[in-house]
Length: 216
Ligand code: HEM
Ligand code: HEM
Image (cartoon, rainbow, N blue to C red; front, top):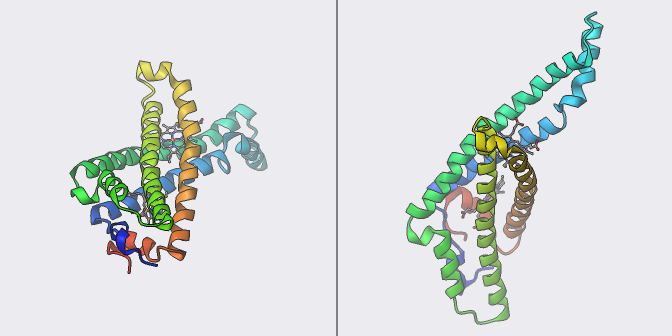
């Protein structure tokens, strides 16, 4: 269904934003895969016994601490990957903020929200479409704020040699750990949202994020 008075809601996405979106998607996904593997399959305590048993089969006896060190090394590798990907996430998040400042006015999230709020709505239905649009865009702003917390706390953990960061490591880790759930919630809502939108009232919204043209 098309909404003529809301033609502004049928928007194009610039090449820069599309490239940013898909690279950011890959980075966040890889980062989350590292977290998932490090907390499950490669969790240190889950593999200590296996290391001991495998060595025992080859007639090498090691105690729990020695086995733990091996198991921990694999776990550490995943956290190193998570941290390295994190640096790219930090760069891309900064890139998104710069894009907001330097991209054409009509492409800015702030302009889009202001324009949408300015539409004269003629019916309850149009009002609901307008409210939905503004909520979705605000959702993105909240997500960027949450990502900023993830990046700042992540960098805080990565640069633990700095005395101030070391002194507050517990709090930084807790904040990083807690905020992850809000990120997962966004990703879940976002994926459900765009799929339902594409299958419902906004056909072509997903391919629009690929080719950058308006929806038909
Ligand atoms: C999608 C975003 C992210 C998620 C879901 C996430 C999740 C997590 C989780 C669950 C932990 C373990 C915390 C704990 O043990 O209590 C962690 C640790 C860590 N994260 Fe992230 N993180 C994200 C982004 C980042 C970013 C952007 C950086 C920036 C460099 C970063 C750097 C780190 C570091 C250095 C650690 C500590 C690793 C270690 O214990 O050796 N993270 N992250
Ligand atoms: C880790 C996963 C993902 C994250 C963190 C993410 C993040 C975002 C963000 C922040 C925006 C807003 C861009 C802006 O205007 O500033 C956005 C828009 C969009 N994303 Fe994603 N995305 C993810 C995965 C996906 C996937 C898998 C799809 C396709 C199936 C998708 C489809 C879209 C579409 C169609 C829009 C534009 C929606 C609109 O016009 O409101 N995203 N995404």
